[in-house]
Image 1: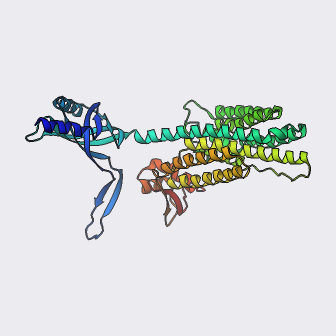
Image 2: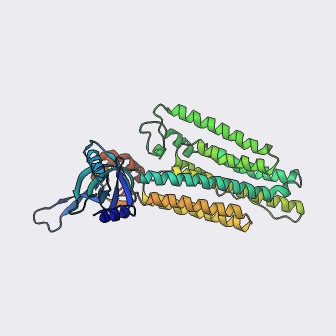
Length: 435
């Protein structure tokens, strides 16, 4: 019998460990029962029943395991207490991650003719999972690290490219300042756009209309429309000061730092990540006309203008990547569209950097692209799709929200997606979320 116990003790070390409310045990098998809650309706003389979707079913996990050794009875008793304790408990599983769960069933049994080992069976109902939030936090941290590396690589390549031409004289330096100033003026103009004003009003609590119903991350309960617009004006004045400071830079390192600060100031002035991406995308396609020259000074001007414009675009892309990590898409289609668009922009800029011989920038762009696209793909997989709804006659938005979702509070979302002339007369065909 001692040999059997020794074998079990050695075997337990080969299995993955699990715990519930801090009490450990060994896992030998795990199963789950996810899905949707479906109410099946049968009708007289109807051959096909109707399955009514009532939402996502609670995630049920069945776990088999055991405890062994001279303290196995103590572990069993502790697990009994843990399962009899009211409320949710922390379940730490090697493959499921960290989960707040309710124990629905717990059974233990001692093996016949074998002491020192107790088999366990659990059924847990998930209340919340920390795995998805951990993955998102890790991706956000990875984007942050990638942007830092990208910042350093872009600055280094720009400095090495323009250092010699800038030493040729003030005419070449003026060309760099002119190129960067024209781009920074676009950023200042972006803060005066209707999109920026709509994003500012979106931070004010309440229903302010479909054109301000954005995905702002934070709504300030104490904010007012006048206060939000005053803050936007102050941010625009600060951005103008940053843009003016570009003209005072005389060396490549200072110019690069001033350029990289512009998109961050623009992004910080707007609370809505979707608007941040839209406005920064205008800066990411900046392409000033550069005429070829037949002199040494003319070649230096062309080199400086081209490199400065590239750094301006790269600075905008750097800030877009940060905005994407905070962006909250409402549908899988929306996330996929942005994923393709951002991927194409990063690919195009990486090709330009490679053609210019900026190897460090190219590598940093490729690394940033991989992380951003992975983040957007993961979020797209967890979101509903877009479907087309067709009706024979115009109906009020409130009626349609009740018909489609059995939830009248979804009316603002239906109105925003259909964009009707009047919410009481919705179009006969429009797109909405599938769930």
